Image (cartoon, rainbow over the protein chains, first blue to last red):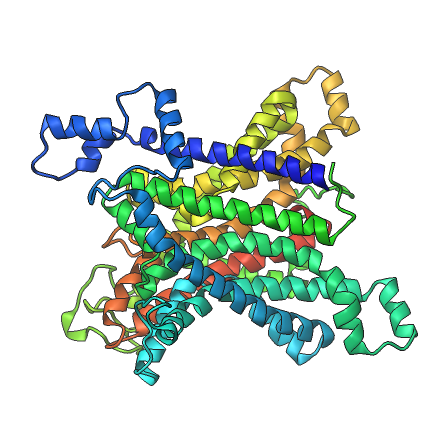
Amino acid sequence: MTVYIIRRLFDLVFVLLSVSILVFLMLRFIPGDAVAIMLGANIDITPERVEALRRQLGLHLPIHEQYLQWLYGVVRGDFGNSVWTGRPVSTEITSRLPVTLEVTLLALAIALLLSFPLGIVAARARGGWSDLFVRVGSIVGLTLPSFWVGVLFIYAFSLYIPAWPSIGYVSFGSDPVGNLQRLLLPSVAVSLPVVAALTRIIRSSLLEVLNLDYIRTARAKGVQQRAIVYRHALRNAMIPVITVLGVQVGYLLSGVVVIEQVFAIPGLGRLIIGAVNERNYPLVQGVILVVTTIFVLVNLLVDLAYAWIDPRVEYS
Amino acid sequence: MSGVPLVIGLGTSFRFVSRLYRNRVGFSGLLLSLLVIMSALFAPLLSSYGVREQNIRERFSAPSLEHPMGTDNFGRDVFSRVLHGYRISVGIAALAVSLALVIGGVIGLVGAYSGGWVDRLLMRLMDVLLAFPVILLAIGILALLGPGSWNTALAIGMVYIPVFARLARGPALSVLSWDYVMAARALGARGRRIMFRHVAPNIFAPIMVQVSLSLSTAILVEAALSFLGLGTQPPTPSLGLMLSESRDYMLISPWTSVFSGFAILLAALGFNLLGDGLRDLLDPTLKDVIS
C-alpha cells in the first residue's frame, strides 16, 4: 500500500507539472502578440506601456526561463497580477474560491443524500413502478442541462415564492440563513445530473452484489432483507460507486462554473468568464490551474479510497 | 476484451435495425436522434418564419397554432429559431466529435502500433488533457481563440481527443496480436495498411457507441459555452444563447426559456439513449471499456 501511495504521488507531481506547462504555454499559443491583444482597445497604449507589461509578464526572457520563473511563483502562490486591476491574481482567487467550494460541497452533499435512498429503493423494488420511475428519471437526469434547470428555478420561485432570495450571494459569516437560502437552488440544480449518475450506478451495483452467493447464504440463514441490503451488500456495492463519484466531481466543478453565471454568485466561474471577456490571461491561467489541481487531488483521493475499500486492487 | 467485436457491413444493417427496434431504450434514442437530425437538416423547410424575421407587434406571444412555441422579445418565432438552433448546436457538436474521432483515433492507433516511448508519450499527453475539467479546458482554449462557432467546435473537439485516443488504443492493442493481423504482417503489409485496413474496422463497435455518447455531452457543452457568451455569437440562433438571452424577459414570457432549454435536453437525451442502446446491442462486454 505504501509503495502504491508513493507511486501515485509521483504520478500526481508529473500530471500537475504537465498541467502547469500547458497552462503556461497558453499565453504562447495566442495567435498574434499577446500583449497587444491584452491591451486591446485601450486608447493610451504607449510603447513604454507595452514594454512594461511585457516585462511584467516576463516575456523578454527565453521560454524555459520564463516557465521556471512562473512556476517558482506559482508554487509560492504567486500567479502574477491581474492585467486590469493590478491586484495579485492569488488575492482574486482566494477571495472567490470559498464560494465555489461551498456550492460544490453543498451540491455533492445533496447528490449523496438523494441518490442513496433512490438507488436502494429502486434495487429493492426491481421491476416495480418505483424502479421504473427511478430508472427513467436517472436517464433523463443524466442529460439535464443544469443551467436550464437553474433558470426555471429562478422563474418558478419569483412567481410562487417571491420572498425567497433566489439570486445573489451573502457570506455564511454575515448571514448563515441567507447564505444557505441563496445557495440552495444553484446547488440543487447543479447536483441533479450527479444524482442521476450516482443513483444509476448504486442501483445496478447493488443488484449485481445481491445476486452473489454470499447474499444467498445470508438469506438462507434467515437474515432479514433490510439487514442484507444495508449490512452485507451495500459495502461491496460501493466500489464502482466511488469510481463514478470521482468522475462526477469533474462534471460538478464544470457545472458550478456555469451555474454561478445563472445565479450571479461571485465564485471562480464568474471570475474566469469575466477574465476571458477582458482578455485578462494571468487570471484565466490562475483559475484554470487552481480548479484543475483540486480536480486532480480529488481523483487521487478517490483512487486511494478505492484501494482502501477493495483489498483486491493490485498495487503494482 | 472477450468475444469478437462486431463488424457491421451493409448486409447486416437490416438485422441490426430490427434488433435495435426490440431494445426500447436504444430505439427511442434512435427516434429522438433522427428527429433532432431531421430538424437540423430540414430547418429551412420546416420553419414558416425566418430566424431573424421580427414582428414587434406579436412579441412575447404564448404558444399558438401560428407560433407553436410562442415568440421572443423581438416577436421572432421561437419554433423556427429552435429548429435553426439545432442546425448550429448539433452541427458544432458533430464537427467537434468528428475532429476528436479523427485526431484521437490516429493518436490511439499510432500509439498502439508503435509501442515503446512513442506510445507512452502520447498516452501521457492524453492523461494530462483528461486532468482538466471539461468546461474549464474548453474555456481556456476559447480564451485563446476568441468566441465563435468554429472556435467552439475546435475547443470541444480538443477536449474529446483523449477520449477517442484511449478508446482506439485499447482494442487496437488486442487486435494487433490476433493471428490474421500477424499473418498480414508476415505477408509484408506495412504499418499504415495494417492499421487502417485490418485494425480500424475491428474497433468500430466501441467507437460508434462513444461517438453517440460524446455527441450527447458535446451538445450540452456547446450549449453551456454559448450560454456563457463564449461560444456562438448573436444573432446566430444557438440554443444556449437563446436560453441566455431569454432570461431578461422571462417574467413577461417564459416560453423561450422553457423551449430552448427543453430542446437542448431532447437532443442530448436522444444521442445518450442511442449510445446506451448501441452499447447493449453491439457488445455487452463493452460496458467495462466505456465508463
